[in-house]
Length: 297
Image (tube, rainbow, N blue to C red; front, side, top):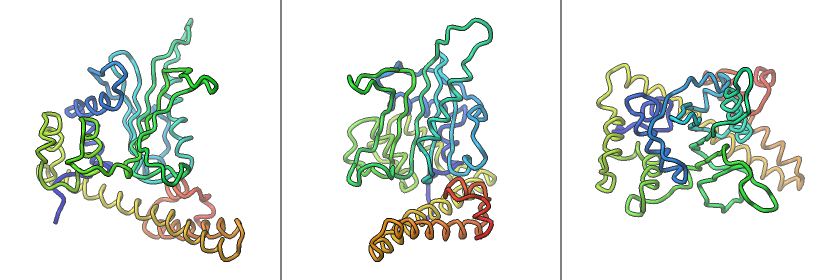
């Protein structure tokens, strides 16, 4: 059965729901739910993502929006669809552009507007405890001894979406309804009664594939194919790579065995990605292998 609604984790789906001027109220509602303790956002202006300094390889695995509210506060909203080496480092790096561009010529007292980075992740952090089911991570600079926020103008919110498993009947509030839709929109074939709120009715209307023209439908299908190909490739990296490493490590009783098996799994996936038309820069960015090494596979 064909999907009725778009997948928000595709480039087309993410930009359709959150990145168009006519649908800006969807993004505002989502951010207000996510950042409830902050001043409500009443208006957003989209800014050029080129200001974030992202490489072409980043664009293959990450979709992001860059905007500011009426107070000049910056919001980086990104959807990360595949595991990526140094993902946390990259999100911190992105935020520095939103900070540095606030510099003013001449006399300036260095007062900054807040910068918020929201990462919607279609995977789980690898460096967390295995049984950690916490899906939301709210990060700020903290004074270690007192455990109090040291600086409140730099905030990162990470959402590990695979950990959200609530059913429609278990949803308790507006925030959870948003998470449910991000996780399950493309699997729905009708609007659940519990989601018949004005903002969500608009989302369903925007997300209905049958309403798109031929060009939009083709663009969505291309975007969906790329999402599936990349996700399958990365799942193979982390499943085959780690499983091979674990088996070799047990047989040899050495850490080197695990690392060797992991590398073999990553090289195998990089080779498959190259055969399927992925560009070398993207393969390098996602797998961590040097371009020269990928060329020789």
